[in-house]
Length: 316
Image (cartoon, rainbow, N blue to C red):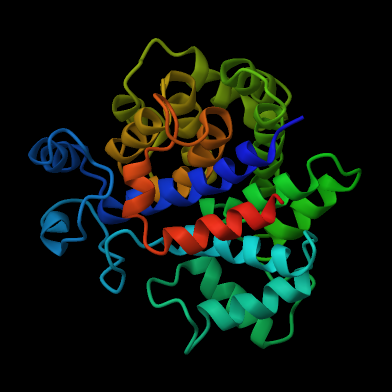
């Protein structure tokens, strides 16, 4: 059985990993990312937001309204789920989350930043009172953003699959999103139970059905560089790209810092992958120590004290 400390580290890992990716999120030119990291002593995490880094290369500068160390829209959605469940005695209520989602991401909401396609579509559906479910047809990584909280809250419940499905369908109705959500739920449940990450990755991929082959390929490839392997999987937001690349990174990283650095250096939708990678590595390695979430990174995350309090309250 996992401890409250590993549970809190799981949530904190996802959120810190997301914030670490903000500055270089959606740069697809891995050479540019490598150059920026080299200028920062070989570190890509928490690179300052700078529109100049995105010029004249394949990239999308989305986070001009954010400040260094803030969460992206992925991390904000997860943190919102944590707070909603804390207020509801640990239960996830779809209607409550939908209401708070509008208050956060809707016009005049507390979140000021990029609104992606599934968020826009979800907000439109909620406004039109299309609530059951409120998602759109979308096969991208935002579908998994809330799942670390859902899995922690319901991992040993008989209805965990139904709750995972309901959480995904708030923003995504895609069959691939449901399939990869099931993979993530299985993987994180195994790691929280103390299973070795390598064994958990293989077990989750083996039981994943048709989606599992790309995951197994990522585990079995002779290519050890996740930057290079991103050429095979693709680096974009689609789950069919992001999850195999996340599996590649998780199977080769030796620490939380190593995993997040590999993830950012691999380019593209690093923040979306960071939710999965950060949750798994945080759950396994914990906070601080030789392989855990670096304290320096927690301190660089905006509102870290409040976020940590929410994570601890969630697992109390």
